[in-house]
Structure formats: C-alpha cells, structure tokens
Length: 357
Image 1 (tube, helix red, strand yellow):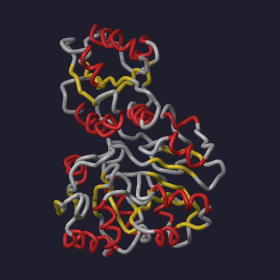
Image 2: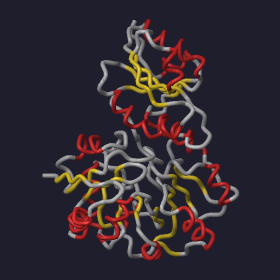
Image 3: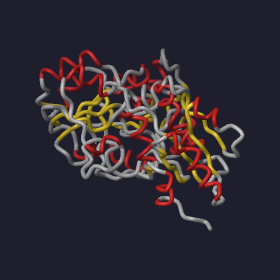
C-alpha cells in the first residue's frame, strides 16, 4: 500500500517531510518532485534499499542512478578527486538541473552506480527534494519515478499510474518545473563530455567549461554502448503507441497524407503554430506548446507522450524543433521515445510502419 502525501511545493510542511525521511532511513522508497521530473528515491549508500528502486521500476541493473545531495559535505562523502574547476562551477549552478559524473568513493555501493567506478551527482533545485534529503540525513539515489521505458513523470498522476502499490510513499508536490531530466556531464575527463542533454544547455555549459565534447549519441539517434549515466542506453521515454519523428516540417503534411491513405489513424504532436495548419485535417492533435518557448514544450513533452496513449490513434507523429538551448533535450527525448523511427523524407516512413494495403 502506497501512502500519498500532498505537500506544498514551495514551503513543504516539515512534519510531512519527516514521515518520508523516516521511510528513507528505514530502507524504504519515496517518490518526490524535483525541478525536472518526479524521482523514486532510496538511501544511496544502502545496497538493499537501492535494489528496491530497480524492482519497482523494472529497471536494468546496469543503468546507473543519479545521487541527489543537499549540501557539499555530501558531495565529498560520495565523490573523490573533484576538480577545483568543477567545484567552483557547482557552487554557482547548484541547486539546479546539472548532474556531474565524478569518481566515486568506496562508500557508494555498486548497485547505485551500475557497477561503475563513477557516480552521477546533483543538488536538485526543488524545496521538497532538498528538505527530504536534509531530513533523511543521507544522499538519495533517485531515477525518474516511472516504469522502465515509459515517459518520465511530470505530474503526480503519472506516478500513481505507474508506481502506486510499488513504493512506500508518494510526495505530491504538483507539477514539476522543467519537465525533462537534468543535463549530465562527465567531468572525469578533460574536456568534459556531455552524456545527456537537459535544461542546462550546451551553450551554458560552454560558457563555464569552454570546450565540451558532444558524442554522436547525444542527439538521440542511437544508443550508447555503455550507460555511464541514465538515458544513454535502453529504450526510454516511450509511449505505448508507435511514435515517429518527422525531422523536416516541410514534409509533415505529405507524410500524414500517406499514412491516412493507407488507413492509419494519425495523431500529431505539434507546436502551436504547426498545429494551426492541421486543424480540420481529420487527424487528432496534441499541442506541445509554443515554438517561441521551447522550455514550455519541454515541460509538456512527457505528458503529451502519455496523452497519445489515450487517443484512438494508430500512430503518433512529432515534428522536429530547433536544437538550440533546451531544444536538443527535446529532440533527444523524442528520438529515443520513437525507438529511432526518424523520418527525413516521406518515403522513410515505411521503414517503420507496415503497409496495410
């Protein structure tokens, strides 16, 4: 039985937080909001507690977790050889949606790191998350609070749908702020390597680090061979319905018409301006937000993926957006959610969809 406790997202009630913290200290699991998505948390330093996360999510054990901290003493508890430059940057950007991959200390169990000698760590910018970590008095390992492969949860309703009955407590702090998971950067090498794009953009990283390496998998067009951080390997963020990414907006209409001609019921996930062009076109429309505000699109993205599964549609289509800023994170998630079903010209669609005729 899962207890659902509603908390004020900005001024969390300490007595409610203490109830959840006691569960963490006792080896249980607590779902809590961060500024990015909801996370399912357990004591990062206790291997048996961490195993419960993998069981609840049906998550592969070689997929490492991010450890959430509330102060810099906890950073030095779990990470060693922290470069001075990284420490200076962390003191500027934390709390915030930027995760550093660092060398781990021996106190961090292999279950938390996917048997790697590195640990992914961040300080979340959410009052509920910070209060929970402080009251628990231990770092908290927390991946997104969804069943493996499904879209990450940005609303408590998503968490309840996936994990009710599979965790001890859900802290309901309302809707999250950013809607896509944190940026992850490997700082054990120089120049550092971006492992997962997120709200903290490449442009912002380059202002702090100068050069940042962008591996070929970062756009979400292929999997990484080894998961050094969450979101690099395995199917992620995916709705149950077939999802196709049409990169070029200029061929969007022709792709949709081809699918309709073959008898497919189509749902289009689109930004506001694009959606207007497809009103009364005999397709179902899910509006992502304004193309002028990609942070808004990012916030809505996973909720829209879940909405797709509620529609009487055979196929969902999402179009490309600019990869500047948070746009790279949006396209990374969309391409991975599609299982790399990426269309550059209209004929490509039949690589991923069977011809019904």
